[in-house]
Length: 53
Image (cartoon, rainbow, N blue to C red; front, side, top):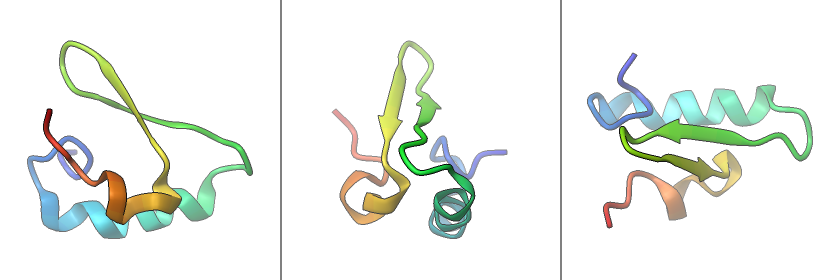
């Protein structure tokens, strides 16, 4: 808990790498940001890692 919502950012990269390996091709990953869901592509980790609006 906390690796994908920003509470433990040091755990995000390893978690996302594992998720990317486990997802079916074309699978989607959504992160709950409290008031909305954010879709991220774990294969594009560097571009999408917890950018705030």
